[in-house]
Amino acid sequence: LSALADSDIPPMPSLADPSAAVEQRSSTLELFPVDPCITYLPKDGEDARVWLHCKYLVSQSKDICRPKSWIFFREEGRKSTAAGRVVEILSRNRLTRSVDGSAIAIVEPFTISEVVDPYYNMPLMTRSSGSAINVRPEVSI
Image (cartoon, rainbow, N blue to C red):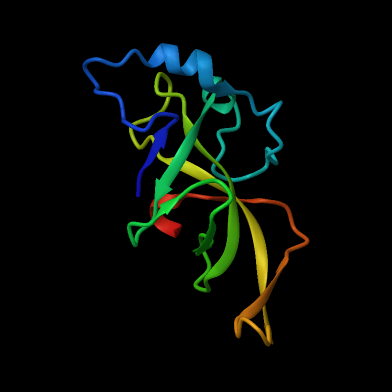
């Protein structure tokens, strides 16, 4: 699974100036409405504050998933599949990220009902009462 920063074409490693992208498209967690207790977000240091917004990620089935896309995913430590809508796709600052450099998807969880819609013949989905879920796309979507 991969995610690209706000560019249709990924930068060439030898030609790109990552500092320009970081200055223009970075955000701080203090301004971004994400629960700081989420497991995958770094807790301190520069990595904890600077993130790049990504346009899309590619699912394991090779589908393009953008913010507002509906997805099915597995939360780490659970075997069941959950449904949700992508709120944001973030990647660590290229200058400070570690070797894994993986992106994260902030997902709004939905509950799949056993009740089927009579017109669409599909299960009804309702917004879960919990907060947004942080999903590591490379293993979950």
